[in-house]
Amino acid sequence: MKNTTPLFPGFHLLTLRRTPRSEQQKLADKLSKIKHKSLSQLGEFLSKFIPAHHFEQESSGSNSRRRIYSKENTFWGFFSQVLDADGGCKEVIRKFQAFSALKSSPLPSSSTSSYCQARKRLKQSELSAILSGTTDTLQKITDPNAFHGRRVVVVDGTGLSMPDTDENQRIWPQQKTQKAGCGFPQASLCACFCLHTGGLLSYELGNKKSHELPMLRKQMDTFKQGDIFLGDKGFCSYFDVSNFKDNGVDSVITLARRVPVSASESVKPLGENDLLIQWKRPVRHKNSSYTQEDWNTLPETLLLRQIKVEINNPGFRSETLYIITTLLDELDYPAADIADLYFKRWNVELFFRDIKTTMGMDILRCKTPDMVEKEITMHLIAYNCIRSLMAEVSEKEKLDIGRLSFKGSLQALRQWAPNFKHVEGLKLEFHRIGSLLYEAIADTIVPDRPGRSEPRAMKRRPKAFQLLNQPRHQMKVQKHRGKNYAKAA
Image (cartoon, one colour):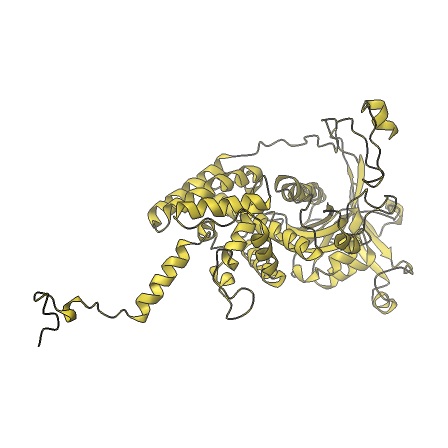
C-alpha cells in the first residue's frame, strides 16, 4: 500500500488508528464516571434494605438529568442529614464538597439552594414505597420468644412541632390559647410498631384535633390475622375491640371510661383478680367518627376478660390498673403472662424516644407541609434501617435485640459511613468494615434494669429567660432577666 506520509516514512496512518470502541465499552465508561460522582457508598451497604432500583433515572421529567444532585445522591444526602447530630442542609453540602474534593471533581456551590430544590423533586410516593420496603424486611424477622407464637403490634401516639410558617399553620394549627407568632404548628402522629424488633410498621399523620383512634382505623391493613394489638387506655373502645376481633386480631388494653366489673357481676371468675365479663354495647356518641349503620352492625354484647393488676414498684404512676383483653382462655394465656405483656407496652415510649430525641424528629425543620411529610418519612426510613441492622446483629451474635442500644447503633453507623467511601470497589475490604460495624453495634449492650423508675420529669432547669407571649415586633424585653421576672412574664 502506498505511503501517504512521505515526510515520515516509518509511520503508517492505519497502524496509528485506534480500534473502534464498542457500545458496551462506551456505556461502561459512562457508568464509571457516574459512579465516580456518586454519594451512595452508604447505600451499597444498606442495599439489602433499600434496593438500588428505587433510584433509577426517569426517562423524562424533573429527575431525568444526571447531575451532582441526582435522585440517588439527593436521597442519600437526605438520609445522612437525618442521621447527623447537626441535621442541617449546610452539613450535607459540606459532605458533597468533601466527597468531590476526594474524587478530584469540581466542588459544588456552598449555597443550599440546589440541594433544597433537589429534595423537593423527591416524590412522597417514592419515599413511602421505600419505607414500605423497610417495613416488609422487618416483618420477615421472626421472634423465637414470641408471645405464645404470635406477633404483637404495639400502638401509641405522639406530638411533633415544626417551623412557624403560614403553610404549616394551615395544616397543623397551634393551640388556640397562644397568640399568633408566639407558638408553633402542632402535628399528631399515631404509629404501629412491632414489639419484638421495634420496627415501624405504619403511621398516620394528623393535627391537634385528630384523635388516635380514627388514625388507628386508617392503619387496619397493618394487622394480620393472629396478631395481638397492644395499647393503652386511649384505645379502649367497644367499636375497635369488636372490629379487631372480627378480623382475627386479639386486643390487650387498659380499662377507660367504664367502671370495673366486680366478681359478683362477672360471667365467671377465672382466678384471683381474673374475671370473664360481658360488655354491653353503649349508646353511640353523636360526634363519633363512625356512622350509625356501622354501629348497628356491632354485636349487642362482647365477651371479654378483665385482669386486675396491682403495681408496687416505685416510680410508676398507677398503683392499680385493669387490663381488658379478648384472650379468654386462662390456661393458654395465664393472667401473669398478659400482665407481663402489658408491662412491655412501655417499649413504645422508648421507640418514640429513639425517633424523636435520639434522631431529632421532635422538632422538624422544613417550612412547607409537603417537605414536612418527606422529612418525617425520611426519619422513619432511617429508623427502620437501623432497626434492621440491629436485628441482623442480634441474630448473628445470638443477642436479645431488646438489649442492643439504639443510640449506640446510630452512633456507630454515623462514624462508619465515611469509611465506606474509601473502599470503593474493594469488596473484601468493604465486607471487613461492615463486619467491624456489626461488632461495634453488638458491643453496646443496655444494662438489664427491671423495675427502674422512669419519671416523666426534667432534672436540668431551664434558663430564666422571658417567655415569648407576644409577637416578636411587639415584645418588650425586660432589662433584668431574673427568676422573678421570668415567672411574672
